[in-house]
Length: 200
Ligand SMILES: [Zn+2]
Image 1 (cartoon, rainbow, N blue to C red):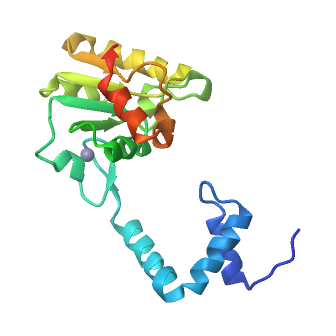
Image 2: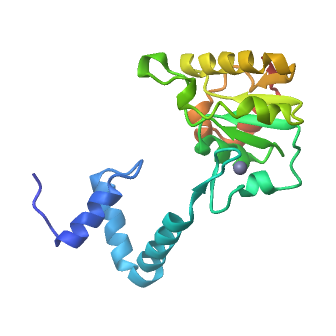
């Protein structure tokens, strides 16, 4: 066990920072020290922003996105084509696709994928409202789910529940690692995967 170098308040800051994805104990200490040095310019505004985000964040009842309003800014945007619905696993995937900006569509966030081994069934995902959303004027559903076994199981399940609606179902270009990995793709690859989408 390493020697404690600071008081409990600072140790707690370091411990919390170390829980962030991509930060280990060493980088958490570095980040804490940086925040402390920039107390007025960074630490204080960051604390305020976190508190505000905590108080105002809500899940969009329509699509499952995270925003400070419901419906979210994406659902409320009148410039989007309401005939295209992109199904993603997570909010991170939605944000990754928005970062590329190749689609002016609406989204449906599942909140995960079907996984029999992990006990994740259809009722655990945001699937119940999907057929009704699609029936409401959607012409194409783009399945931007993971290329893993679970992702493909989920894609097949969705295709089955949408079959009675006779809607066009497509998926991102084959061979592209999608799902939780969308965020790691460069914009060119992601744009190409969207443009070259194929019928499911
Ligand atoms: Zn929304």
